Image (cartoon, rainbow over all chains, first blue to last red; front, side, top):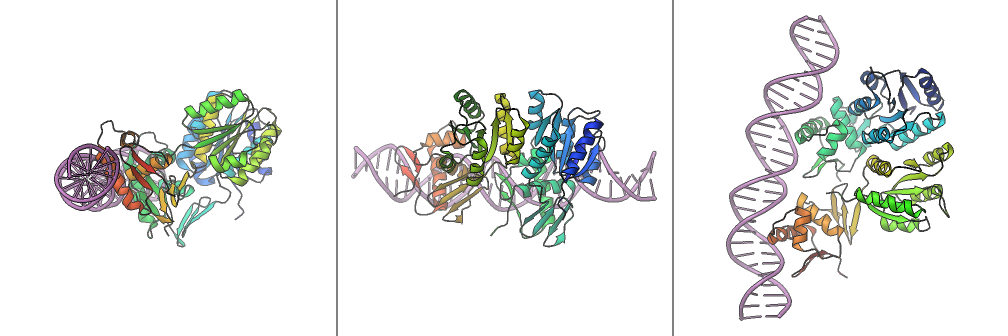
Length: 222
Length: 222
DNA sequence: GCCATCCCTTCAGCCGATCTTCAGGTTGGG
DNA sequence: CCCAACCTGAAGATCGGCTGAAGGGATGGC
């Protein structure tokens, strides 16, 4: 496809938002802008951004809260804009799972460079991942097994995309719980239940394997 | 237990290098340091870092040149340290394919946070250990002997990984009990039983040897 | 506003894999 | 030859993982 990556910009300062949107458009990205994160969930579902640029200082829910929302509801990358130069904010952002951050004021060219870098790192440029006869199109939101479409719930899709992004790597239930659910507390059964549902829908031959005592791995057996 | 990730630090200022190495060690990383990149190719091959921290201003080849070397010769991530605050440098670094950069002077905690973040983004790197025709991939959770997969239980895998991490080194049953099982009480037979099972699965020629009265050692006999 | 539906999460029972212990056999150094 | 060290098959206890079912919150149609 056109392979145009989509970037959602949530920034309340209109001048900055406009400049950023222009810069990103010039750089060849598909863009959308919002003054706040009130409709973030909906935007994630409809606009399906590959990356979300979040201002930390926002009316309503702040950038950190929105970061959680993005993580829970999509596989999009996150770039934080922080007005304060405080190390604490930056650390909090990175620990909270942001892919990168930028301190205001910034030069437009640098933001574009960082957006590009994050997208490249995330390997989001090609939105299609193939594993055996399984095909994930994160842009279109479709999953095909042997050419046949599979209906997944949001959680199942996030789980599958995460496993696919780490194919051939064993991921523990704890890792999955934190990166797919964003949970701190540990309830292995929650993961097991969703793995079970995912397997039922994915069908045979089995791609999603249990490594007893370690976790799960998406792998094509030879 | 996963093996610790390895970080190579190339930085000519000795005070900074020492501080960084200490901080990373405290954070649980395996580390190595160099004042310049003269032996980078060799280091990449022998130390097998998961991440390389590169100072941009270096005697001899500078950070950008070394970045290229890392990219060509390994799958390691790269974090650039730049003394200048100039946007140009930062852009050049990100465009050149660095996974992240940090502007000096920086707070040690932030460097550690960034190193952790980059490693996490990179998917924690496949740590592969080879001993003779035995290959352990702790990320993929696989063990191969002469190319053939071997099914191990969780305890057997931990035991083997521990022995592999200390290849050619005799480990007593007490040492194994404490480091693999975390037990305080001493039941040598418990270790013997698992060693026995491990040998059966690993097959011939024997890699796991008994040193009577001392312990066990993983070694390729000549 | 109300109801049907979907989905996430928790719970409980089941099953097989695995851990640990025990008992008896084997090995090797002195 | 003897004894301590080591090996290993077997078996009960325990654990990790799977799955059907049900509660409850959110969503969307009427």
